[in-house]
Image (cartoon, rainbow, N blue to C red):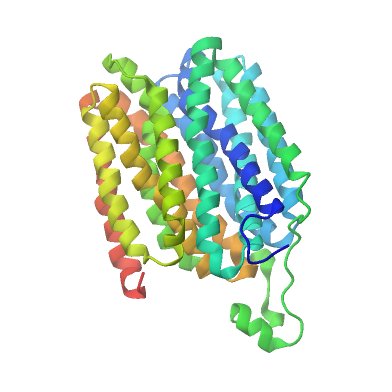
Length: 399
């Protein structure tokens, strides 16, 4: 493999697999609350079910990160894809909301395995000087899957019903399994240098005898980045989970699927045009711009009355939450040594999981307890919290 290139066959296949893996969980997210309601769930249970997959994934992440550093990335990704396929099949066949709960739990396990292993697999194929650029491209494919899949799901649901939409999720899982079979670099764990303790100390600050990878579950240095991405994620997933229900309840004449389509296009263009900046521009500049952009998006969603305002909100969301996903992840990987990238990724994803779990839950509470015109303004509280995390934990480190 040419280590100076980010466009090798293996990397392209990992990028394609990452697109498919995002389709499965993200297609279900905007539909699962309404599906649960159609099977008898109340407002609070709708919110719980919406966030349950990511709550389960949260507890699986540390284990998945440890496996990503110790086992073949191919094997763990294949296991995760198969588990997500089983979860999708449960949605298709579910006779009650209890079955949906079981499916969400399984989906969380499979999603955690795939997300950590694919991102670690990708980062290990990249030359060090292009980690930011490469992970920005990886984040772009993730974001495309994350943004396109709700549009696909909503379209299929509106024309063929919930069960047909969840069958598409099942097909996406099969596509992952097919794609990764053609990757020649199976992502075997990278062994530490054995020439002497000096090499080990250079890599991870400890002697060879001190290495205990199976006990490494969280990298505390990454936790502030994890907290920041959690706070960006909460309003995005609150919107994604309840945007269809919210617009129907308010009687707004908008086409919700267009929000996710334009979000995907805007994010794709942003990340491609800025990919070289991820390795050169300080973190704080990305953070400041993304806070402003996310704030504009939340405010626009709160005042929208037509498609144009909603589409502007989608563009702003791409510049906020969408951009910071890549920035936070590439920063986390660069902070970690090559032997700890699985743990660094799992720590980063803890924040993403918390946001994806808390966002729909908060949305369910707000949907059932506050006037709908205050639904989105209440979510603005996350933005000063982001600034506070940066000021307290990252400012003095030069980020």
